[in-house]
Length: 197
Image (cartoon, rainbow, N blue to C red):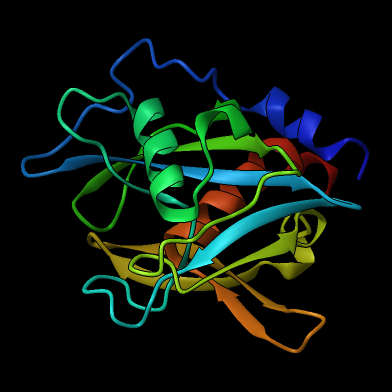
């Protein structure tokens, strides 16, 4: 994969939201923001978190740092704040390179996903109340369509095709990316690399 992060950067929307892309679209909906963090080791990696089994919502699920946008807060500011609260990264350790279009989650949230490059010298400090584990998966694995396992689900009155991304770490730990996190990764793949498949 030739300079994958530059291809991703070129495919994303600008960081600032100038219209109402992140505005709520239905009654009772709340705004949220997440960050897909990329870090350069020997190769590019994606940083992910696993939620504690004790969490009231989505226990044990693999996710990106993120959460609800507070009143008066921009989506961009919320992505920075939530990333700091969950894994200890500060704004000056993150270079936002763009965002995906906001979307309606199956839950009550209107989600704006950002993509950012993390300073490789940063130390991650997960908050144990929100994060049971922090780990990395190679970007090349996640952007390879051979690793996207299709799954059809029925909701909102129609069929939807989702993609799971099961991954076995070299240490033997099995991770299964699914749901909203896998969907955001798949959307980055679609925008940046699907024409190469």
